[in-house]
Image (cartoon, rainbow, N blue to C red; front, top):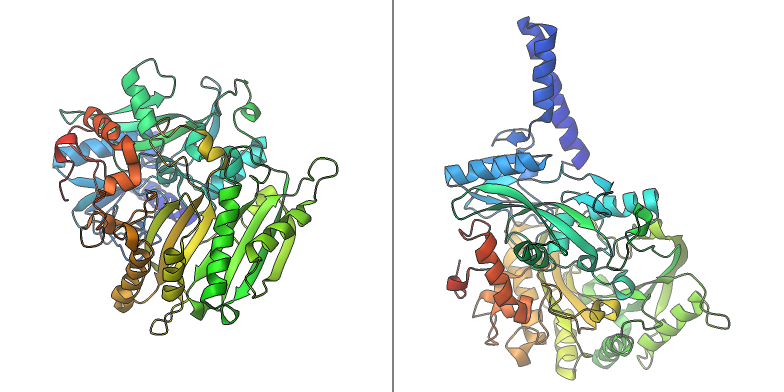
Length: 543
């Protein structure tokens, strides 16, 4: 069920209520009052309701929840009420946003109440805070469109337009503008969170980076990469870039490039042997390591190297860069793109074929198929890794062996490699809850399939690919992992043999501070899942 369909269903139910009232012979004022009450109330859906099947599942069809009720609020007050009722009833709750989670955080069998925030998607300018206020239920596509069409500004969020802002921000979301503008949390000014105190009393608080109360500043900091579902229910965000002090919406956030150049280059698997694939992989990584510094002249160039199983036919390189011409005498965008492709393909032997190249206005580019994935109806397993250095021989060889296995043929399994660094690395690791501020690459290992009977096959393949790539470090990456691509395997000692706890992979040295904030704002551990921040006394507990 789409967002529009959900709203129509709700409006239809409201209209039906009005018709029933009219049939009873109530006076017109009473019917109108009841209509207003119905329209303003949070929607509650029980098992058997027409919306239930859609509301209890997200994009990842591996996880389908079985809650006793789903609440769809559209105000902060309704979220407070929903939380209070869950606490009074002793119910475990979860809060899905866009529904893109790799793990079962919202669909766990113990979750009895879902609070679905998808109706809380308003976007407006807050003159008092001089910031853009966005409901946590908005999607990245909606944010891109509204910010740019109304004010000509942008946030450096992710490339999948159906991802919900709520979880994306709290995990430190990144995307095509991150090397020039930083992470989305680098522009977070304030956050509204519905929390529960030690007595089980829920309330809404606003925490800002300049809050006079240090506890609230802590809560703001925890939402700059501390991950979703840890401290409370985020209902709204406010965004204003540091250093911007204007009093109009146009002066709150940066302006994206007016036009971008995009292109796709393919290397056919039939033309790649181990040596040539390894060279391609190392070239790509080395280029980004060399252009990793904040302010680098190539920081506007963003790309994905998609290396999926050879049964898919080709390794793809999707590229985007600003279409603005360099300083007088400098190379054109087309020349810059050609130089990048030449550097990636140098010495590979196999020739890359350009299959697409065009100039696009910025907003249209956010829908470009090279980056804008729209997964639907798939079963998904994901993992992640940060890399500071190019691939070593063992890593490249492990990837080649896995992606060319003859006993496994599935084009939906592999690794997507994206650039990191640039402006991201201009921020101190302790300045935000997300500590990874010295990496050059972000890797997403992923498998997507449709048949439930193949779950073990594809999950097993991805585990083997990942763990063999990082065999030297006990099956996990040395530079850490990204909490927005959660992977419960890393807290399993059979899968993570590194001796590095799962929480250090995701949060590094910031984890004790996150635990302290967790104790201050969620002392009863109301908000929890398999990879949630743990209370200090439960640091090594298994949930």
